[in-house]
Amino acid sequence: MQYKKIISINGPVIEARGEGDFAMHDMVYVGSNKMIGEVIKLSKDIATIQVYEETSGLRIGQVVEGTEAPLSIMLRTRNDRKCI
Image 1 (cartoon, rainbow, N blue to C red):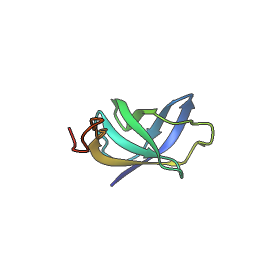
Image 2: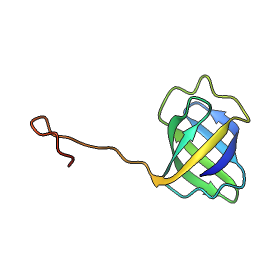
Image 3: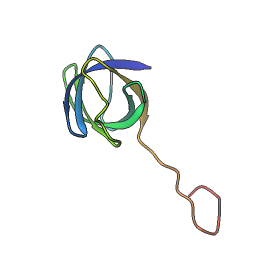
Image 4: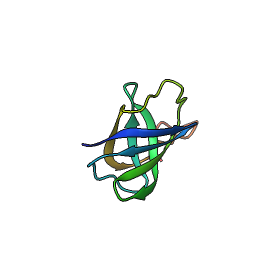
């Protein structure tokens, strides 16, 4: 896993800096509650991340953990429990 620390919080968008090697569209876990986010911009050692949950409890310095995998979801039909 790769790690960075939060340096900026602006609503659902945060910035994180560190040695972790994040990639565009990677899914990340943000803060101690491991909120789900996605890398939307990279600039040197700073990643801009869209957090898909309420960010009011986040604080500067909390850890962002990279999953090294793109954000994904499993879809199912109403009549079938097989993955699409």
